[in-house]
Length: 181
Image (tube, rainbow, N blue to C red; front, side, top):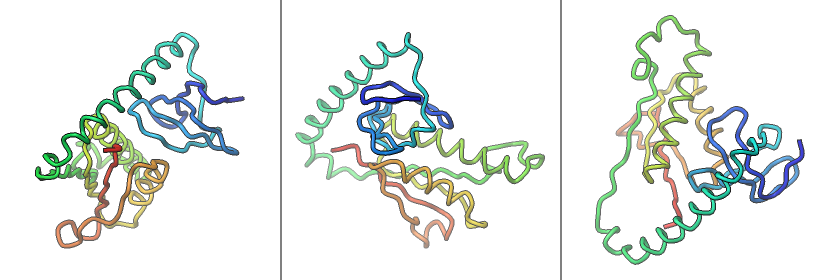
C-alpha cells in the first residue's frame, strides 16, 4: 500500500485510528485519536474507508485545537496543579485478576489476554489524561513485561521504568505519560 502524509489509517494488530504526520523509511509518525504521536511500521497500517476519512480528519483537527486550548489553560493553572498530589493508577495484570476462566487457557492465550487488558487500560488512561500508572505484571519469565515494554516504545510521550521494588516487588512497570502540560 502507498501512504502519504495526511492519510487516515487504522492499525492491523491494534485498536484505534490515526493520521500520518510523517513517513520515514518503513515507519510512519502517527497522531492517534487520543492526540498522541507514535511511530508505527507501514506494513501494519491500512487506509480507513473513504466514508470515515472526512469525519476523522475533522475529529483530528478538533482534537489538535482542543489540545492547544487545554495546554494554555493548564499553563495558567500550573502553580495550583503542582500543589495537588497526583494519584497513581495501579493495574493488576495477573491472569487471576482479569479472567475467571484462566485455568483452561494456554500460556499463549494468557499472555494475549493480559496484553489486550494492558492496551485497553492504557487507552482508557490516555482518554482520562491519567499521568501515572503502575502495571503489576509479576516477575515470572518476563514475557509479559517484555510485551508491555515493546508496546510502550512506540509512544514518544510515555516514559517507563521498573516500579518501586519496596512497594511492588520486582514485577511492576511504572509509566509517566506526558500530555504536553
